[in-house]
Image 1: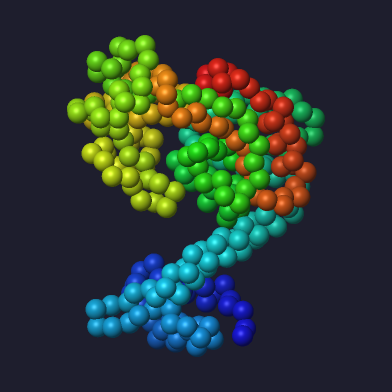
Image 2: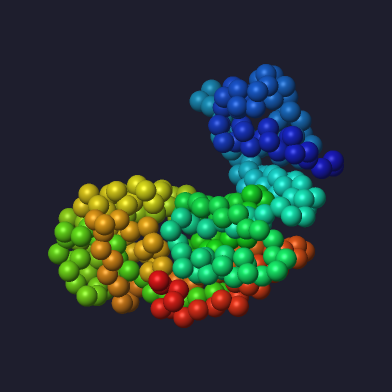
Length: 291
């Protein structure tokens, strides 16, 4: 059996995500008949049905669901190989370091200062993202390294080095009674009737059950806290984005969070190795990490 081509995988992913051949064809910029024909040929070569088709529409079969997961991984790998190869041809190009906006601010500042003082170090471009986006940017080659947080971020398949371990804090509206406390527990913040905890998406994109608002961006979250609509518990170092209308209070029994530097496995980049070495030289205490 011949291997599937990236073109075929893109066709399949479009249909699998749209669950409609017409919409997928528009998305791909091709006519529908060639798309339908390409999918049928894929099924014949693989010897399995990828889609169930009936009058009600199109649905993925179990085999189709497996291919959707594998195809996304394969297409990310191809995109990453293309980007990394092009960047390797530009020796003085900046390394791209991705991190959540507002997270690990002091550690990031110290790392950039250390690199600026290191002779011959590659320049670093900082790419700020929303929660949970670093893994995808590392996998598809948009970033070379990332600052990430265990247990919240998806570290599967990456090489990592731990940089610091820190406590968490509750970010509260300044006018709320809990904001006047010196410290809190998870029990104190878990079931506040007028201030439910905000719900971040899980690694698979779904949201946990609960009364709190669903949020995807830190700007959404910051405004909802300022309006007295929600609270959140985050690593202490993430307080860098705090608004004047917010107050942070330590949550003494919240799980500790580890900041790590992550990079694609098997990287042969000397510039990446140098950056990782500089980061591990800056391993800091929980107090320094939380600044």
